[in-house]
Image (tube, rainbow, N blue to C red; front, side):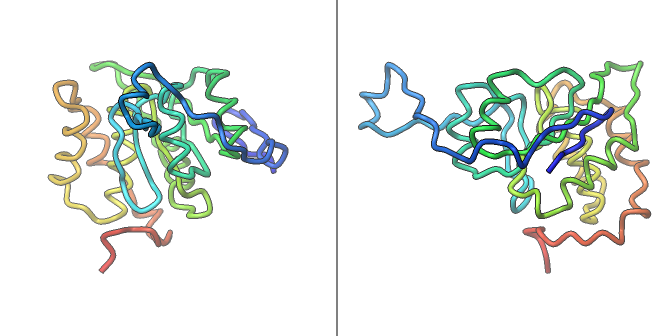
Length: 201
């Protein structure tokens, strides 16, 4: 199976080597942990919903933790190439990479591509891609916008969407991001069923 990402980047899924256990990451402090493996989540890691997670950019120290989630897919929201070490981790664990290259923007020069956010949401909404991790560099702005737009589909009120966004963005919260989420039109996506919500009634 060929997985196509943003701007025509294609990732081979079917030809990935079969999942195989990675050797545990050990540190000098392992002797103090009764031989138990340490699991270190990436920066700003959190569960968004059943089978959907968010974070900043994962590195080698986070691989064992990510492996414990049993991920099937990763949504990467930056335009830069994925690092070789991360690609090797994906291949070793049969994880598909969906890349949607959104440039990092700083106010007042902000360009959040609405169509790209929609494409990313379509991947999130397909439960065949779960468990899934959404990440950018810090897990704040680009990831926050995708999650915020997902919340609109889940019919969250704007104040709750903004509260969640601000919890991760903290002092770096951007009015432009919140304006984008407020104006994001979900009417064309309401036909898509959200079958994974932990808040289902």
